[in-house]
Figure 1 (cartoon, helix red, strand yellow):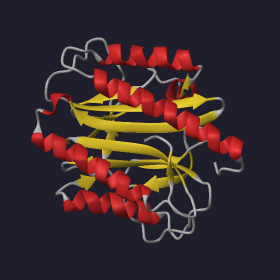
Figure 2 (tube, helix red, strand yellow; figure 1 turned 30 degrees about the horizontal axis):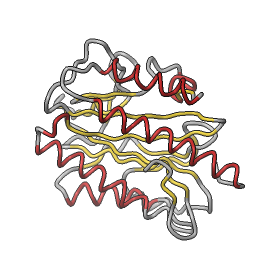
Figure 3 (cartoon, one colour; figure 1 turned 180 degrees about the horizontal axis):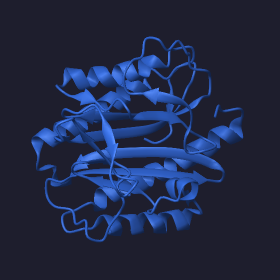
Length: 251
């Protein structure tokens, strides 16, 4: 969607503030010995208190209130009682909500206890890539420049990107046009219009450039033709395109 009036602006900002709050709460509570289902139940309580809907559950019937992926899982991980976090685990928390008719989407990857320097660098690169990309979200700029910044951050730090995953438009539905690639497609000459709402996300990989769906029909992993899996980190923010400095609704 594109922001048309003050009601739209406040709607996106309120939804963004809510999902950012839940994201940070789950990150704080992600300690060794805690299950991903326990984290999801905390999110459920926050949704209910705010009168918000879980976007993946509402739009797609996802079997959880949030997507919580661990270690070699990239995204769309299903919260489970038997998935118990350990020191050094790579975790991704993705929180998407519908609040008062408006959607916002955010996510972060982190290491439990920060006990793994190589995975911590992967997570830091995902954050760097997304934050660099958000600065490209200004009116009249090429859409492809967002992906260029994500890919550049990956390459500069010795990583690659998952090329068949992407960010997206959002606002009135969880997923809207346009698709926001994590690399630059120089054939794409589309420009960003004032007020466009985007979910900008990086998918930074230790090797593979391709995501595959697991047999549960949801969970994504990254592998190559030899079946070797890669670790992947993500950082996602909901951003409003502006003439000047873009507005990040999910900081």
